[in-house]
Picture 1 (cartoon, one colour):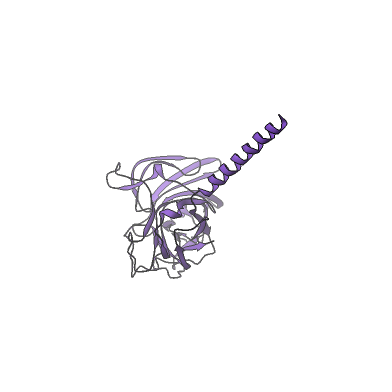
Picture 2 (spheres, rainbow, N blue to C red):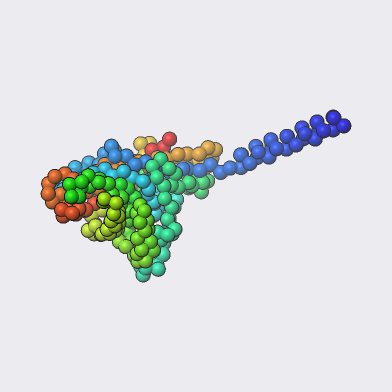
Length: 290
């Protein structure tokens, strides 16, 4: 009888071992895309060239909390037109607000050093890719400002996609109802002064949001989009025979990405003194394979 129990136990353990081994071997390896918000990364303009803050303006590097993407594409070379590469992700859109817009209610969000997209490697067309395109849609961060002589912190929800249908959104503690389409540059600001909450909304000027695209001359991006483009240090080669996961860090420059007209020339953001926000776009994208 003892021998029979031992035999049954041995068979059970063997079954569990081979079942687990089969489960592990059948897992599909993926490419994980991870956001990194870097305030020290080079600050670029729309054409991918280093850019300083214009005279008469001031800027700061916000503390990023969340971001969402709308579109992700791998591009073989600088001559590949937008949409002609391998499109890995396209977020939900809606026409509830009239024209086609990003559906904010179905967006997914990720913070610093968090995965925002996982794509099975066997779903990616085998090839050699030199460029990554990521269309950014929403960002949430903290900025410093002054009001009535006090140094304070406020939270900003910034919509930088081409157009977004927003039913409602939460800035920090406050929820803002919209139920309409909003074009690129719409934002909400929340802060607390002497225990009293304050919420303000606004719209940056059309075309003011910086979207860095170093290969604009050979493969321009659609007007009004936030399709940031960056080059791999060495080509990302996909064979289709990969057996382990790949991690790609999508490093985004937040170097003085929050910019305003410095009406009082003091270098601080003073919304009560007439300082007007003119740019909330990220300042460059570098894809890094790990």
